[in-house]
Length: 342
Image (cartoon, rainbow, N blue to C red):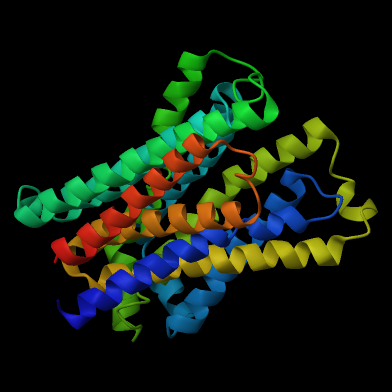
């Protein structure tokens, strides 16, 4: 196995670990609701850190932005609008179908779209090769693993919190909510195209002297900045709906909670930077291979942290076995990708 490819595999999995852990500090926020913490997190992760990274890793950034024609920014703007919309739809979909079902559907659809989409768009000639077929088989394992542990999660909720707890939906029809979740998964991956299709900004960054690993920093910053708009509007809506805007001033924990939100942003953004670096190391199929490994790492580490936090305490042995089966399928998929796709 080429060392560059192996390095890309390792970096992609580590990226998933960072993404799987980023929400952990959310548990320790004091007297803030979700919308308070998420708004501050969004400011750091979608505005502050992407542009700091762009200024650090892309020489002469100010001149590059000044000289670039507006058409260079168009792919990132369009992708950012749809990616931001996916965030709002995610919240609505989970509200209609429940967390367990909604997360499973969104995660499965994003895995499929984030792997096959870049393959079709950026390497269509590789679609029917042995490498791609092995990748598709691995993605099938990941999706089935997600389905298996999600089903176990639903059973665990019924066992530990009562039959009604896992099936409660606040509003809307299940069919409409399921449709929203099916759409949300693919929309959540469009940031890949905001970066990969911004060839003008990528080439300008390379010409300015940026490393091949970091030439995507500027289109990433553009995409996330536009995506921030939807996050801002949705958090503002929730703050008004729940009457929680004054928590910023009255909680007495602004500095502490903001620091937690910043740590979330660092882990989340570092994960995406590492995903981008892994894609570069793995060649033309890098965005697809890297995304499969990225999702696998996210699923494994997020569930490991949940296990350590006692989220599966009280579950029956059969539920725990199904949970472990799901995680095992994801691990097998990682080995299939690592040793079968290169």
